[in-house]
Every structure is written in C-alpha cells, then in structure tokens.
Length: 242
Image (cartoon, rainbow, N blue to C red):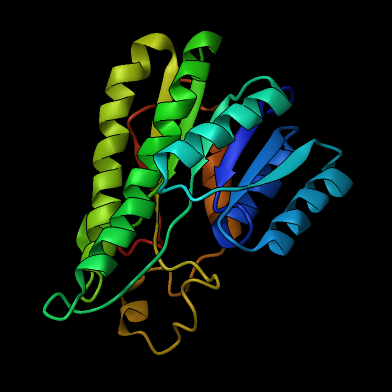
C-alpha cells in the first residue's frame, strides 16, 4: 500500500497517466497531477481520486520541458503536500514523420518533452528524496526505445534516452535509498495511439491484442512497492519486443 505517500504523475490527465494516478489513489497515495493544457480532464482525475478513494489530489498546469516552470511547480507541490515520495514521468508527445522529411523543431520538441522533461522532474525532486532518505522514480518509456519504429526516429530516440537516463540515475541514487525504474509499454489503447486496427505490427504481438492503460498502471504499482528493484525496464507489450 501507499498510504502516507505523495506521488507526482506527469501527463496525468488522460491515458496511462490517468490510470496510474487512479491506481495509486486506490492504494492510498496522495496525488499531484501535472498536465499541459486540458484543465478539465486534470480536474476530473483529481475529483475521481478524492471521491472514489478519499485521497488528497491536486492538479498543476506545467510545461515539463521548461526547467524553471518545473522548479516552481515542484516547490508549490512541496508547499501543498510537504514532500514527495514517488515520481512518475509519463508526459510525452509524438511528432511522427520520416527522417528524410522531419523538421528540426519536431525532433527537438519531442526530446524536450519526453526526455528533458523527465530530467527536469528528477532534478527538482531529487532533493526531496534525499531528505526523505527514500524515493521512487518511474519513467514511462516505450518498446519503441528498445526496437525502433519507422517514422518515429524522434520518439524512439527520446524513449531510448529515457531508458539510459533511468539506468544512470538508478546507479547514482541507489546508495541513498532512491530507486529508479522504467516501464516500456507496447501498443496501448489510448487517445495518443489512436485507431491501430490496421497497423501491421499488431499481427506481431504474441498475445494478439493491444494493452490497456490499466495494464501499465499495474506495473507502476509493482515498481512503487518493490523495494529491491532498481535500474530495471519492465516491458508491458504483449511480447512484441521479446
């Protein structure tokens, strides 16, 4: 259980982030939900956490690619909740395109959000973890970062970088009792993935179907409570990257 713990979930207003937030709330955690633009969706998640599970939950608008904005948001969360015990770096975007035609700004924007955004949160939460002498960081990567995907060189690079970040942070912070792991989802049915029924890669999934955000949330719940696991990458992909 996570009673007495406070968790930050970035990109927590929909999809995988929403499922993780609700799962953590069901386990007793207080939630700080970071969102980019959809305040209504973020408020809906915090209301769900309060009403269904009786936990404290607040929403914070924050561009995770902005170092100073993240610093200010973490400071506000510290004021509101006193400290943070769990960080889930889930915020992510796509700007798909073939490498021969990809615009520089599309490459940069994806890395700034997906990879640097995670660094920004880790950087500004690390001090709280050190003071607590404990902490749990969960980075939501992707099997695309493990196996690549045509038309997604920017996204694959950001997720592969996130896996490298995970392992390096795990080595740095393990002596202080702080764990850092990653989850690599495969094809998960969310607004971001859209209709994948005609995607030829679906036929390569050994389990023969897409996953759900709740499948990823279960893995996050495991990592949030697995005290002897760090530097790991858990695939939630139906076997596509085995």
